[in-house]
Amino acid sequence: MHFISSIVDIKPYTITVIFDDKEQRKINFEPMLSVFPVLRKMETFISATLDDYPTIKWDGLAKMKELDGTIVPAPLDFSPDTLYMMSEKA
Image 1 (cartoon, rainbow, N blue to C red):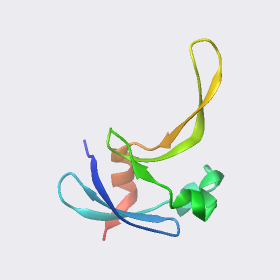
Image 2 (tube, rainbow, N blue to C red):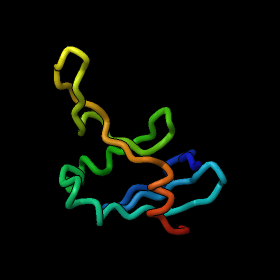
Image 3 (cartoon, rainbow, N blue to C red):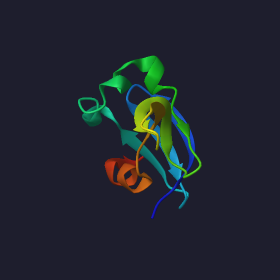
Image 4 (cartoon, rainbow, N blue to C red):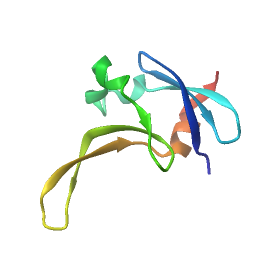
């Protein structure tokens, strides 16, 4: 299992990160924009941060249902293993 230690750089639709094995890799999110069009807005894309898992997240871009049925904003995040498989050495 992989974890992201830090975000090094964010450019249009690519994020360069350092994984827990100290490897620096670039993740291209462009292929995912058709599935997650909310990330097309550059101000939104560059607001990526790390969560506690740790992986890349965008606050409030997803929705989740509370136990009482209320729909609330939730972070949009991705499995760090998936991000590793999508990435290439930087």
